Amino acid sequence: MDYVRRLVDLKLIEEAAIDVVQSKRDPPGFGIGLQPIGAWTR
Amino acid sequence: MSKQTVHLAIFRPNSRQRGHFGIYIHRSSSPGHHHLNPDHGTLINVVGAPMIGFRLQFKRNFAPSEEATGTLTIVPIGSVDQENAVSDDAANDDKSEDDSPRSKPEIIACQLSPPRISENFMAPVNDVSLSSTGIFREPIEES
Image (cartoon, rainbow over all chains, first blue to last red; front, top):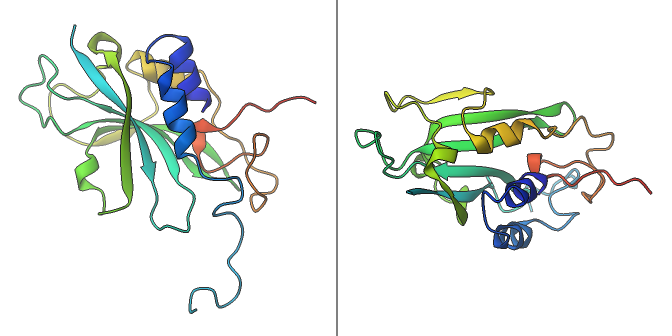
């Protein structure tokens, strides 16, 4: 997000880019941590 | 002045994994590049892992169409003037990877620090901890 904000600040791309990127981010807990034992076989 | 499209590139090998974000600047039909594959461009991203830290990487002549089906999503987020974006080798379509900036967007990427080693890489990602989303990390805020 830092990078896109920087590109917007420097007027390389439009501000709307920030909203697009924000909308594509995963929720904080998504895909983090180990899978429970046996999770792959269920 | 001709423009080159800037895309958000989201890599997700499977639906249970967090997306890995990068910026893909499509070369399109840049003047002087007509002999090259118009589907190629430059991918700006960071590589590494939360437990070892990340480093910036520019992938030249990157082709989204060559990625495995369903693993890459690209979303246009804007466009930049050609003079700000030309970075791929003009001579050929050879793929390469480096960390030497050749264009304004790449110079800007070099000015940001890639995420360092995460102290707890299994913790939920928030605006303080670092994530596999690479250079899209949030700044660490002092409380």
